Every structure is written in C-alpha cells, then in structure tokens.
Length: 251
Image: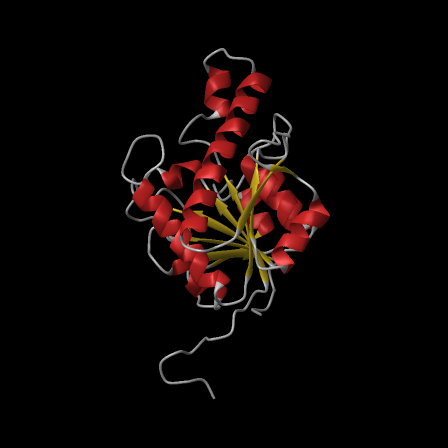
C-alpha cells in the first residue's frame, strides 16, 4: 500500500517536544551561535511543521553559560543557574528569528517573565498556539534553580501532552561508553528507563528520566547534525535510540 519511494508518509507523532542543547547551536565554533547551524535547525523544524506535526522546543544555554560549571568555580549555584536560564532565552530568540525568516510562525514562552521579549509561560496558551500550527519555544528552563533544561523539557512535554520527547545530540544514539574515546562502545537501539538509570547512561539527568518514566513518555535520542533526521524520526524511521517501557510496542 505504501508508495515505492516513500515508505512513511504519515507522521507517527501528532505533537512532539524537541530538546536541543545550547552546544547544538555553536556549529563548529567553541561558543556562541552559528547562523548557518541556526538556519539548518530552523529548516529541519519547518520540514516537520509542513507535515502537520505540532512542534514545541526547549534549548539549553551551554553555548553561552553553563550554570553547574559556574557553581564549581565558586559562584553561588542559584545565581549561576539563573544566568544559565537567561542564556536559554537568548538562544530561543535567535531560533525564533531564524524560523520566522522562513515563514514558520513561532512564539517564545519564558518561565521567567520578561514581557518585552517573550510571552510568560502559560500552559493553555502554549497548547492553543500548537493547535494553530505555531511552533512554541519554552525558554528559561522551569524558572527554578537546581533544575536542568533536560528536566524542563520533560516537564513541558508532559504539560502539553506531547507524544514523544526527541533529544537531539551530536551522536547517533546512546552508547555503552563514549564512542569517540572507546571504539568498542556498543550502540543501544532500545533501552528501558530503568536501564538508563542503573547504567548511569548520559541520556538525560535522572530527574528528567524519572519524570518520563512516571508518565510513560518515550524518549528518542538521535543525531541532529545529519540533515533530515528530525523528519525521519517523526515519520517513524528506526534511527537513534528509543528509551521507554521494556515491552513497549512501536506506534
């Protein structure tokens, strides 16, 4: 029944949350934002919006400031985390600009209120934006120190009733060890939440994994640097690593 050229033409997911690291925006640089990378990510998002998928995003702030590293240098952890949250707002505004340049209506909602640059985070308003075909970027984490953007992504995904959390990285899945340092590292195709926690695999932090486990939200870890991978995941192609219930069946 499927066409010869396109085995998957209907999206597997209706509503997704895409989690990007701040480092993903750097491109080949050591810090900051790469306009070329920004444009590429925006196009990837447009590709799935054009399929009719409702898209929300969260972005880290590690390309500008990382709270935990600031705390280890002697800075107060709460202050460092708030600075990290503000960095995510900068990244969110940059991605919003890149998306609107290619015709994708986008809203930034910040957990820390700053009316001049972003809407305040209001769950019902966010869902309404998604239903109208707008992309929503959730900025400033949860608005609280001591919570990572991974946890914020899990929380927002649950609040908007996302079908899946897509964790975009620079590696093509989850490995038993760092594949760049250990050539014998094994890639996992599927993992349970408990496996991730027990083996201390660096998928997301333990709070985020526990939240997803308690609410049965699947996580797919995949390589963002390969153009078109976001679309492949949304169409149900088996790429990356899926984290979920041990006997969960594919949709």
